[in-house]
Length: 146
Image 1 (tube, helix red, strand yellow):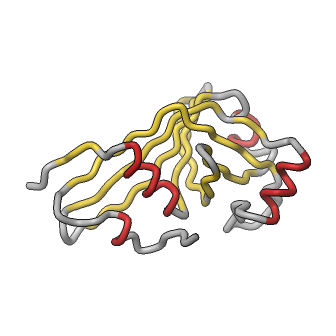
Image 2 (cartoon, rainbow, N blue to C red):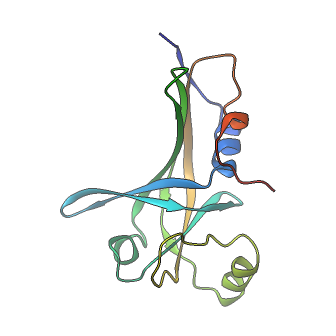
């Protein structure tokens, strides 16, 4: 069996910034909801696009959210997970929207209008790794470069 160890905040941030797809979680009246999302990280915030009429699009503003990115290597029984917590907010400033559109704006993979940009500035970041002697960032099957 592999050991589990805590990742430092710097290691967590490196993995979070390198990722492409994660999951955002929020509480609703019907219970917790989790949505897979492609994303980008700018500064100390995760940015995602969603549809205004979606569950996330109608409930994420001013809501406590968690965002998780991970990787599991079944063959070698190792993996890692990073979670950030914060309060969701819509990006509405025209200058910021323009800057994001021409820079690192997350581009949805699914069809439909996803023109609501959600910012999740994190107040807490944590993570765990299973197994020693390997570099989680270098073994990511898909990772953001630059």
